[in-house]
Length: 470
Image (cartoon, rainbow, N blue to C red; front, side, top):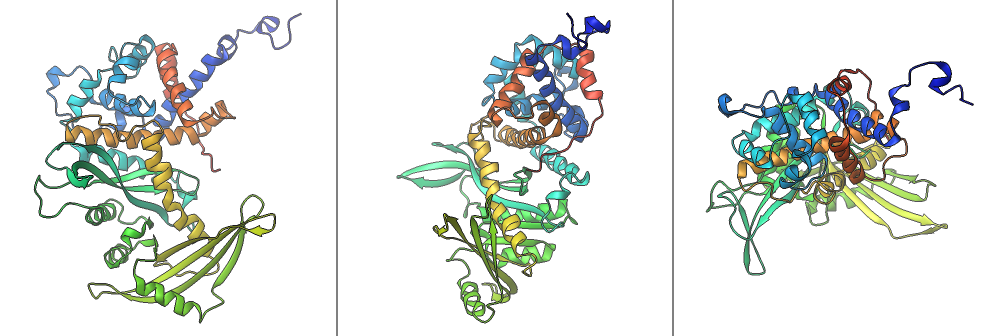
């Protein structure tokens, strides 16, 4: 006997959900989450890239610029790992070609070599502006307001990482170093990434570390790149409340001076070998202020004991004879299992915050401790999580920079989809891992057959997207 839920028993026409199998429903939900996220926050892919100048002769254009840029983003979002995989997995695929026809008005997905040819003629600064504007849009829409330190400061982590390494010179701008008697040629970058305590890591600005020619008197380096990147960050976000979280390489007078000039706060890892006079002052003054101590228990069962100590108003004169006033904050962290203490770990930061009992926990746990996210959720995910950051996507130096920036864009979009309410509603228990999500999204592009009007309807629907704050 038919149930009351059976369309046949009520005479009602079956819904799409009742007609489709669960696997196809999941593909629809996932593709919709991806396309709707791009549309909701950034107005869709064509709008996203409208500020990038197309250098090609319009007479010979087969694929609009937005198509070629979107294909590059998809390569990274779906973790294809190489340009040739675009041809193998995307180009000769009927369902995907139909989606490109509906979305962009082209017959199929472009060849990977076509991407490389265009990217080599683009201005990387214009692509960089797109990446930066995406984060600026999220800030302007107050998507990231809840993640601010002390409800005011956006955490910006700056750190460098290697991207490409070659046994022979790749271009005139390669940096060089000796290793086991051989000369290596490499290309590092310095990144400014907006990080949050919940694990979001968005590339804000990239500074490519490169020599001006083959035989420079002095090589470019992270510190030089930091000064350039800091100036660019201030110019692009002149009024944004910023707190830099940095490693010990940047603990010094030039960094303190720039942060003070720009009106920024900073929390910089303080190693024992860094600014030794500050260490000495900290230990001496701490004995005179035993009240500047706070014990805090954290963890699922309060099994982690944290002892905070701090000293404000420490005078420091740098090598340029510039005077600074800094604070030092120390955290001694001890796990306790069965009532017995384990090994203690020491964390220490130098800062221009005035530390108090009211803000010390936030400054340490929600501020200084977040610096490592640029390495783990940032560089490590992009190198080992399927994005293949260290793969040479092009032998052309300009195209290589464009591919790098599109990777940053793809990583941002992927995080928005993964944390967004559209995906979490469709997959309340998740899909196991980020790589599984990328694979499922690839399968949705390749195997899900949609009528053009169904695809366009996904873009037309207006909905609110909320984010997982866990």
